[in-house]
Image (cartoon, rainbow, N blue to C red; front, side):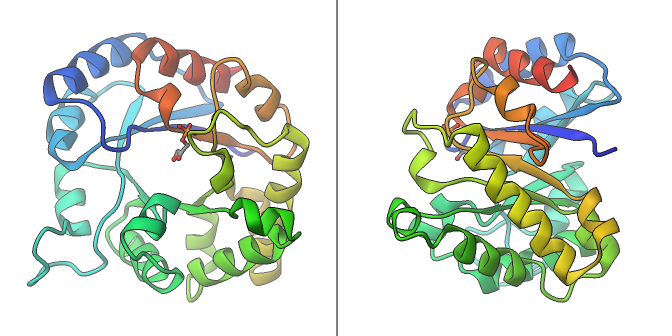
Length: 252
Ligand SMILES: O=C(CO)COP(=O)(O)O
């Protein structure tokens, strides 16, 4: 039985005091569950405080990116060693916004996934198609290529521990959600792709999230699908009340 993972991605939002207020509320109220895990992926400056405030609670803290090298002359970058040392558990890799605005490629995503495992961080690898690709019926091919490249060279055990987030780019921040059936069809394809590079047993263990305009009003429907094991949520994860509703949905 796969555990669900409900992860908030705050993107570039909040001040430190807002982040602290959120986490105090969320950590106090987050339900204990064997079925689901709750993660908050926050901007780098907030991570030490958020990790400290969530110790012994149900919430885990993730970063939104990292470099693949341990250290060195990479001005402005943050390494996996630094994240691990802070007590961060998850890291979002290859988000479409990083691919679009910051030159992230399938190759750098693959290097970062390897680096995450070297430092015992759980990668949340984002894949997804543009509207043009969807309209040209290229969704499955595109996502398949992204998944194959991201997972290249990993052991079966590492693949089994990777979280894959299917985020159609046209559904991010637009209020347009993929229908739960369409989202499930792609998530199921991703599971088959993982099965082809590893085994059915490994594919059955991989957590596959959907992301793109997920809200308290549509998460139940999405989670009811066979191959959707959680959500990666932007806008609706920024306020504690809404985030807690999403986390609660994961436990049902
Ligand atoms: O990009 C996303 C999460 O990583 C999705 O963002 P929204 O939930 O705001 O559409």
